[in-house]
Length: 565
Image 1: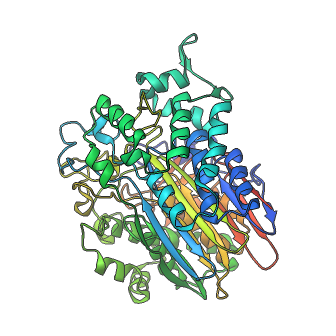
Image 2: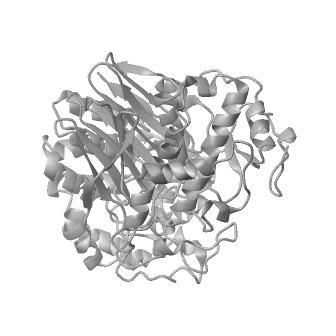
Image 3: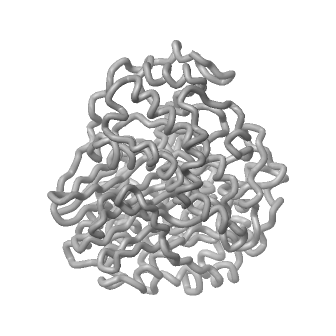
């Protein structure tokens, strides 16, 4: 087998790659008739379901679920971060994107991280102006049915009672151990008696954050931007040394746009516009739809190797285009959008894919720039009784954001600036960042988020899907969507299946344990370098609907769950 300088040879992998398919994971495939909520926390999925039973809009259910997740999954998301929401309204048969991602400060500039590259993910310079809370508020102003305070109330209850530390939260404290240097986070997560981080099941009670949530319930979502809460938040920011000012908070605006419809063999796939990665997901699917994949495409070993090779090549061509994407308010990407949504362009790329070989040169695929990773992310999928749906991905960027929590507000600050590129700042692989994604004042950074909704000819939702997990989000959502729509797999089989990923740079196929040895060897015979990763990768939440029922599954990789009725 091919080996890389920094890789254990495949024959020394422990355990070795399996020879036979893996048994199903312990996750449950849930079946409902009316509605479903899938998230990274069973407690919060139940909160969303309860909003539906009280007649709430899909937006109400999403907001209540997300307020709750900002506690139980505070390592991944919260009101100090930002999100991108894809919303489908059944009656209008239209989908909208709400971009409430972080925005760089007015004082931000292109070379601000060059003196010390660690400043992109830790400390005061890594913060963008948070958009999460303004996003909830704007969505509720437009679509909410239930009173605002009723949507914050379940989270306040969870906060005051305290909640058990999940395995993912425990792992995150170890991965971003700089949180032990922060007074507030240390108090929450560190056991001073034992001198170690607290363990799975420990009860977490973030009292300052509970106070903040009570203020938000009372004063509304704009309180963080121009109210009493803003005053406390600005003091927290000043204490940290952040360049975010009162003017930055007051000037923050969310961005509404129409989601982009992509025709998929009779269905319509609604993807989010840039600077999210919906275009890339759509382009992968467009390249591959010309192969007319079906269950036969993975029926034999040889067919499966050829199918996986074609998928890997589509990933590589797509990631070559990723480096051209930036915030459309700053970069002219009209032609790029036209290309990536064009059947002819996708077909021209598909014709360049050779079933017998691959290239090791990034420039052969049109790319030569670094892609940054984001880790602290959570995804929520919701389907309402009336047929409306939301797919929403939220993030504080790295685990526990920049590793600091406000002393007055209990808000965990994001490290959203790490999603930008910086000129001359080479990444780990010695590659330059991509110019369309350079820092400018009050700009949104490129994101891997790909919340997606697939709708049938009749206008009814067929699939609500999305994922957390950095640059692997886009490829994992593409793979699971193909498995469900083309390979005839149910939603649990599609999510359980071992994943693989290629982002062009580094030049290897990343795959997880569970991919059978014949597949790894088959890809290597075609010239692909391979590398097995041993961390979680991406985490999917998906809801599938057909004429008989709603089927939903939360990824076993993060122990989330589904509630519905």
